[in-house]
Image 1 (spheres, one colour):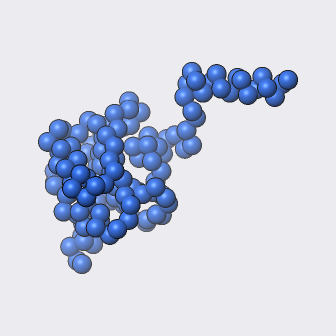
Image 2: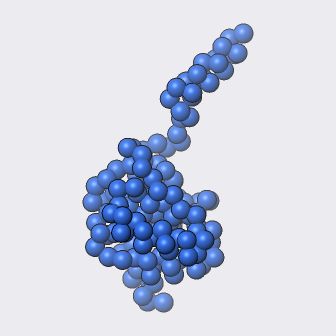
Image 3: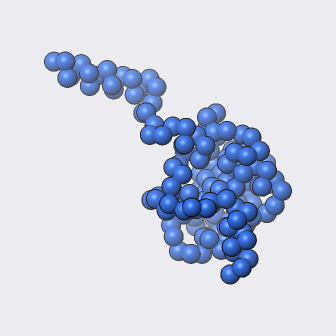
Length: 135
């Protein structure tokens, strides 16, 4: 009987508060995904300063099934640019608007990620763009 009561308590807790997150701080920093799944991360200051669609396009063409996560606080013209890129390559994308996702100049504005661990040592756009220019 105690086991059944525990199960009911867990269901009520999940119904009221939602399912508990694995590594919630990491998911709040990474727009709901895990750090090891990220191929590329663009901060708000970088997204406002440059157009990164060419760099993203090169990565998308690598034939890995990516998903693009976009912060809902991005300006509409910037957001539209990346949504059009995702649509052009039939890439899954999500616009994240949760209050838990940070909105500072150094927080994630755009993330290109996979549904499995990539374990990249470098995910910052500035270094990846230099790598793309050298190729």
